[in-house]
Length: 415
Image (cartoon, rainbow, N blue to C red; front, top):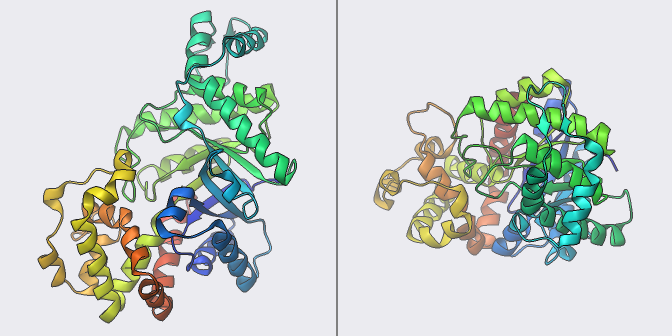
């Protein structure tokens, strides 16, 4: 099973927007960019909304059938590990192996020795075309990278082999994810991580490193764009080199877990992948949920009241809802509107405050981040919330489709 050159992860908390998501991707394909849709939903999200991976598969299959999609598509078991992967195996064909928690764990001495021995064939330095500085290989460097990453990649190997034992070789796509950590991996780190992945026999088709900067949920990138561009470009060059040297899959590409909207760096990525003819996988986990709330708000009446209730409840439970996402949100409480203020808003005002239109006078990134983590509130509404999605399906669906195509795919692929 091979993932297309370009692939796009569409998260959907409540499994109602599959057709709208796919319509957006079909628009991009009609413009000449072949994009593979990947429906992704993490174990954490399933737990919070009390859903199961089967629902994601049903949603994806139904959308594909309804719209006559004939290309490859995937269902991603997002951010899984050995403790929860079995929940996903039957219904998924894309597995994001999240081993970030194992970074820095101690490895067995024999494993470190074996890794260092495997590096002897690299010589004293590695020159990667396009990167000015060679990788100077010393015993100290090998000790350092082994100490950081060897245990994590070994764990990825265990997860991969467990999945393979059930689904069979070649019947699924593997991503290795190390992005949910504080310290970014350098291109030198990436080189040795890829060597370790090859050593574990993992046919990774995507890899998700941690880049410099803040990748907060639902909002734009915050950081040094020039530094991000340098890291991203060098990672692309390292991947191209590692594919040839280590025998990794030819289609191996970077995966960027964007936390929804990273509009500032989309053009940067677009330029670099175009320059090198490289593929790209991007995940937009919370985008659809936010567009659902926008759609309900602009629908007015009961939809608007539900949207206001979601915000008011989320504000009252802010600490609880933010806790699982503490490392990927930055909310300034002083800039959050009061429940009394929001109660007087029109649907248009609510939508403009939540919708991510850079430079719009009403847009409030703090408001958006709180709603982003507030989907638990909607889940607790049960059929009241999902019923409103059905009643306002046309408006909500247009919001979802427009957002994915106009604000994401067009920026990513320079359409």
